[in-house]
Amino acid sequence: QVQLVESGGGSVQPGGSLRLSCAASGFTFDDYGMGWFRQAPGKNRVLIAGLRYNGDNIYYSNSVKGRFRISRDNAKSTLYLEMNNVEPEDTAIYYCAKQQRPLLVLANSEEDFTSWGQGTQVTVSS
Image 1 (cartoon, rainbow, N blue to C red):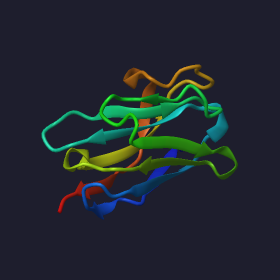
Image 2 (cartoon, helix red, strand yellow):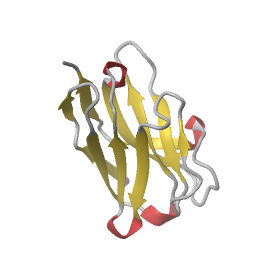
Image 3 (cartoon, rainbow, N blue to C red):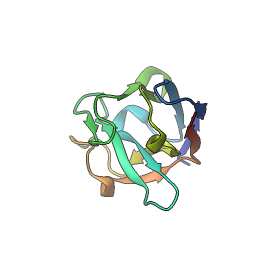
């Protein structure tokens, strides 16, 4: 069974940094594109970053572009999200996600992701 376990969330001040991790198991990690979604209170869950199974074709939403960095370590079956210069509007539950189909070229479409972890809470406040 696919398992995605996020960690690294917590409280951080505006302008600070945080690094989220996602430990993946139950599938061949380096065959699948991966991504990060987030869901803020009262809002839909949205894709904010994604990358191809080999780590290229990286996508960022406009809301996080230039501040966040997605990466993966295929040898460790781990996905990362480095969050820099965080803002209060970054407050959300952050989810690690896996694409349904293997070996997709792009990781920029929400409908391609069908598995998510339990989520980790990130709260940005003074």
